[in-house]
Image (cartoon, rainbow, N blue to C red; front, side, top):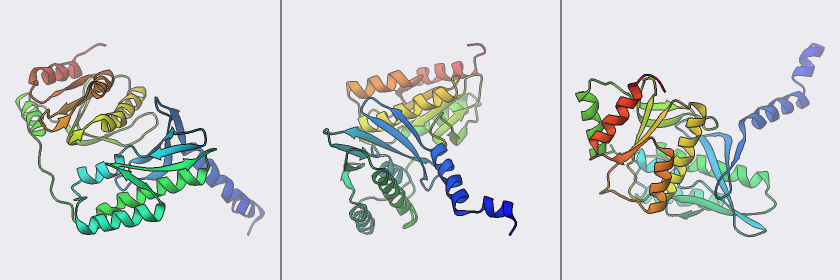
Length: 267
């Protein structure tokens, strides 16, 4: 082997190359409750793994996924209540010593922060996310909000990109239900989660802020079914602060107005 090849493929050179890559892929941002980190690990659908760190005491912190991992499995049709799925989920939680609170996966860790704690928790999320491949997901039922949007698009002769992927400044490959291309592109997410929405909207609040930093012209929309979700004042305020379009599917004129804005010329 030539001298230059030995230098390029030495243990030191290989280690430095990987360390440089990992350093470039790790991002950390301050949030209202602590710190959010984007890590060089991917979920099965290509989404980058994110973890949130929140102080508990002077010597401990909570690391959590804010419910993202299990919610994504549910949205993709996996029955989380099935006996075999529960057994596999419990197995992974025990292996990584992870706790579950509702949809949220979390673990208490000691301070000062150790990198191995963050890495192992992120690995646990990826392992659990791969449960989607264990069993055939059921076909998810189309929501009334979906049907309403499709009818509006049809009436107006619009063909949006379905299941579109958009990028944020930090988080990449954020998936939305519909994307309208225009002077001000409109990315629209149909809310299908049931029950309390605070954790879900804190997650999407971060995403919408991130994509707006990446593309200032992007319009952010969320349509929901008021009969399926529970909205408190804090959650509603988050939605209104980060969305250019936020309304129940019944408010069709509000949806039309947002579409008009997407195709309007000028600022």
